[in-house]
Length: 415
Image (tube, rainbow, N blue to C red):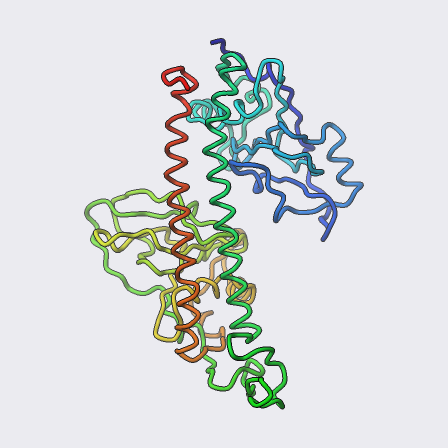
């Protein structure tokens, strides 16, 4: 097996060293650093640019199937694989890597760049403290072990099978999360819950198939509902005991997702300073830009032997009371109105602003009858559990894949 410098076996296309003056509501997707995560390129949620900007940013190269998108600055060293020919362009601080397919299998290279061996090399090249950066020159110097194309394809197929399972599970998680969000909006925003279809007119009575709506400080709400503040309906930062000695599950800000309830990067750590939480709690980022970016998670990973975990001091813990279930509270915390209210309360120096806990005393929401809340919880709780089980399955698959890859590359295991 020969070892090459990456620059000998690929062509690198650097992105333009600038950002567009503005983005558009529609147009061509732009893959930015924040859009690059291990897996296949995803254009969902990307910023869009008009045709002239797309053409300007695609002048050097338009990514095609088999290319690899790699990040250079900030969240450096992340990469994703272009599995389809779609029109998109590269945002600032990203690089497109096009392998020489006469010597290198694209998926083999993508897999290697995500290995512990490659990550260690990438880390050694980093410069800059406030904004860690890997230069194009350093990327070209990454050493890549390259066996025969036949062996590369065998390794690629094995790793692809793992990645494909992980991708499918992630897709199922996204679908389940979308369903729970849709149910929340239909029942508690649009008031279209079972037995109360299309309640939009207070003059219509129940005999006509519509519920009666009544006036409230929030506008019209169904009869039998109450208006309460979030501080009244939710326990904010509850006091939870946790001994200092011994290792406990710890979650840092990195562990919260910007779009999913799944919490990752859980480590065992001594101490007890920071937010304390139990299963069913929602972890809500309180600091900029984490809150604006959507960092929020739902705790469901603690076991009976260690029922309390702790995490970043920049979390607000939201815990259920009698009025609202924990699942409802998480879905509420993802709603635009709730998040915008918290954002508007932020104070502090630019770049380090924080939410004030007392803002929840001025956020009002309609609280449904207990029977309806129980009915909703009965439907969504199994979905939350399925999301957790799928995420745990993915964690196991990732561990197996990451243990297998270096052994395949080194030849310790042959397929």
